[in-house]
Length: 315
Image (cartoon, rainbow, N blue to C red; front, top):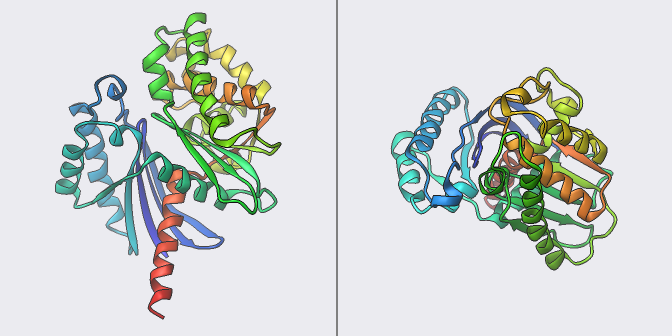
């Protein structure tokens, strides 16, 4: 069935049109992503800025035209951390409804984690059934513990690349004190993972979302983004430390000259790298398997399952 999904994220907005037929068929028909910085200042002011809302609404109106040419079974729009934490979110949602006709589902951290898991599982090799999923977003980070025979355990952390950058990384290039403060903030949040999950068993780490996929592109020095080379790429802790050491000696504009780094990520990539490094160091991972499938794909899989359930209930 042909479905479209839009993820209104703290840093990036993503569109995906795909032919989805669970349990295994997922064919991308059209895709787009725009780095729009919706969450700028939300951590401090608890409000979406007018300029940021304007950027997102303009993009959604473009995507409405783009998706109109497809015979869609359904189109789903979701929003995450920046929207759910802003005091003026209802004004934003009302404006989207008025200008596009779309209703937006604001996901809780738990719902975001579970739909991300659906996306990750769709793209993983069938041999990997037990893993720790890690979704490093702009405003939050979701950890998902998957073990055969048990329901997935999820936790959403008050930790994302935009939030960390705005809170503690004050300089460009970042100072040693900036990095130390970032590590302290990250460690404080990661302690909640052990409280929620208990001691972590030995299993693979699977990472998704822009920071992780960007690091995979940069580790391979890709001149353009190639999903096939990102999906199931194995990032090593050594790779991550090497890239971080390069990041902290450069300004944002200098980082943009590094292969694989997309414009708009030249500052947040520092925060994302430190988050991933500390997760791996704290929990004893030497490698991170990269998933180019995440929330956007999971939203479509979730919708496909709902459509099939509805069909089956009427047959």
